[in-house]
Image (tube, rainbow, N blue to C red; front, side, top):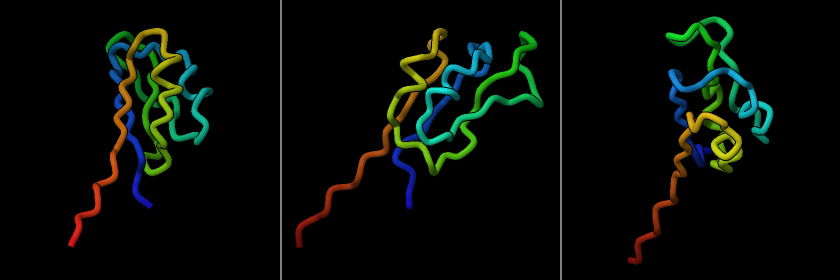
Length: 80
């Protein structure tokens, strides 16, 4: 099943507050605890792209506006 959405996270703006991870209904986001941004902070990342439903919960709750959600639209069926 193809993904319905895609999340792009600006790791330099992300402070690792984990609010987006907690608000994700499909658990497709996670906090990267093995790497840090240039400020020395952990950051969120999209761990399961196929599970994203483009609900935008993460983008709305992000206090730093570090998340952009893209919704993949279905291609209209062409008539014969």
